[in-house]
Image 1 (spheres, protein in one colour):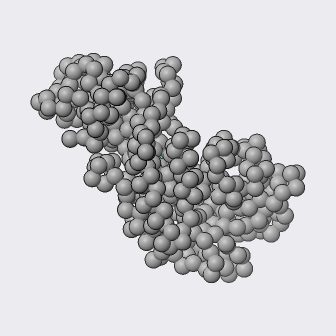
Image 2: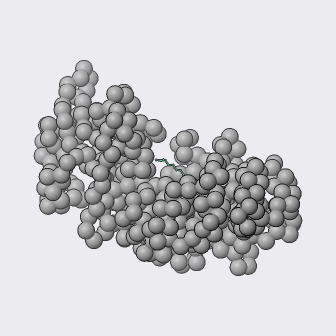
Image 3: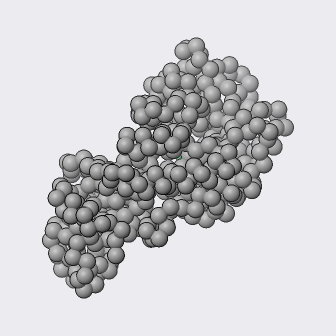
Amino acid sequence: MTTFSKDIIQQFGQMPTPFYYYDMALLDQTIQSMKKEADRFGFVVHYALKANSNPEILNRMQEFGLGADCVSGNEVSRALDCGFKSEQIVFAGVGKSDAEIKTALSHDILAFNCESVQELEVIDQIAGQMGKTANIALRLNPNVSANTHKYITTGLEENKFGINQWELETVVDKLKQLKNIKLTGLHFHIGSQITDLNAYKSLCLKINEFQTWFQHRHFKIPHLNVGGGLGIDYHHPDENSIVDFGAYFKVFHDYLELLPGQTVHFELGRSVVANCGSLISKVLYIKNGINTNFMILDAGMTELIRPALYQAYHKIEKLTNTDGKLTRYDVVGPICESSDCFGKAMLLPETKRGDLIAIRSAGAYGEVMSSNYNLREKVKAFYSKL
Ligand code: LLP
């Protein structure tokens, strides 16, 4: 069983593989569901461009009135080119270069999510030279576990991200001295592919403690930015194609103690775009190994690195000749690395050269992380009509 229609599979057969295919109707439904649930609580969502920065995708986000969460000067420029308003753009990252800071300052973005004491000094200095005042949200490291893969955990003291609790007194002194920056918010992001909502409850309780700390020192905090990270169900992309945004936002509504007038901002990436994208690939060869069969695809880790890098699971679906006898395959790519493997011992209908395969839930951190290692061609993208 597949969600792809016969017509689409036939079209795929005429197209040069591998390529990303984006289901724009599902993207729209997902954005609508997220917007509806966020609006119920008056929450503001900035789409995290790092998950997928294709202009076609960004245009949809922008048309639904979302803000943008950027992590490089180029992402800030891309967001502006795609119609996001500068006052809806936030800019995070532990290593913002001077040029990137200048780009963001020249557009008067909503906030720099500032990750270290030294970064505060540099932004202040550059803002001074440009005759600007920079809006700053302090990215604080809450030391809260996200119960996710260690490579995508960001909110523990051992991680490079954010300002640690023991540095806060120094930060407060700096904020008083530096005249070209203005504190407008607190920012947090504890990790990605988070499926245990209790992690967010712990984050909220920690944020409340930080708020009290700043209140005692008479700081006004107009906005709280709680980051992103909501996980999706990679195992059931059709049954659970849209995540339960309602349950997610409700945790923040229930546990965050907001001060009067305070706005709450989110930076969601994966949960909005992952399920609308599939990597479509053709089988090049079948090779019998000692204990397994290798299904060798024309897509590899250069097109989708998540399985190789995070041992991530993506559902692998056969699109042609689907009624063959179920057979076990190691589904691998053509790249000269043993980690270039999409799935081991996968049970799929018997396959031959030329069959089409879909690797599902690849819309987030797929195409954006592709490379031309082995001098591979840049992977192409196709979009369904709405
Ligand atoms: N905000 C900040 C500060 C972030 O670092 C991230 C993701 C997000 C928001 C968006 O998180 P999301 O809602 O997409 O989980 N390449 C990895 C994921 C890296 C996430 C990096 N930061 C993967 O393929 O799983």
